[in-house]
Image (cartoon, rainbow, N blue to C red; front, side, top):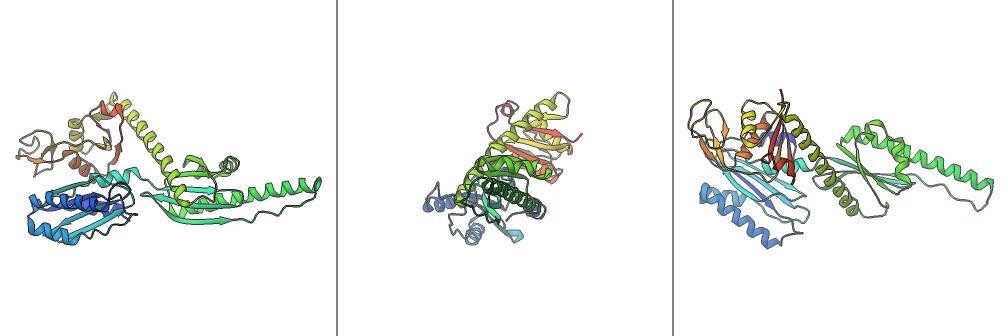
Length: 360
């Protein structure tokens, strides 16, 4: 599992020459046949060979072990033969295919995947059982199970049945309280960003009433289901809730960006954002996930621009970069800025597909 320290390490990898190889491979077998995935990898390696040379490309090819697994839907490869650096990560979700040979790691696709997939906790319950698990990078993790035996029923009527109904109600309340306690402990030990509730229409309102305040604040959605369903069903429903939450949050951030422009607390448009990044002013970067364009980079002070032949800061001659947006993402990431990739938002598109909220 990739962690922030891994991303930081990748982002710091620098080479004096263009020999840092970044390969992203969408190997989703729900969409592609195994032979199609293998051919796609061969095409990527051809693109690498044009800049890296046949010998170094052969090293990369031998290092990559493409043992296709249906659970693995995306792969990321990073290598620098001159620095003897080799690294590979596998994901249970697709990743945008691409091949890059540059002086540093092309990190944008990796951050897009991690941005889309926060850690969610899902609790699925009925009157006597519950399942707790987290969903991260599109898979179920940290699974636990709660079971409380349901009280037996009696055949007698009248007061006996009334007493039995009260006993059952008390049992359900204890069961839900136990779920709440274990869920709170689960949050303290495992940690998660958002909470999804699942179960019957009768049980969910009662569960929400007794949730700890810290847990209530993390609830982002729910779905009705039955506990006997397979885990694949719970995962699919959870990912659908997650998708809606992500799009809603993106829309809110874009609205906040738009409202901040008049007060000079934000900038929009690639050139303005590049200037803000140079001054280390970017607090939150919002960009269209499909945005990509060529640009310029200063080899002396790392200035990023669009068409400047000479660096306006140190007067060095700038160099061409294939994707200045990826260079920007790497730069603001190293400055501890938050990065949000946005899918198909018309308001952000009207701003040039990119904007930033500023620190000052």
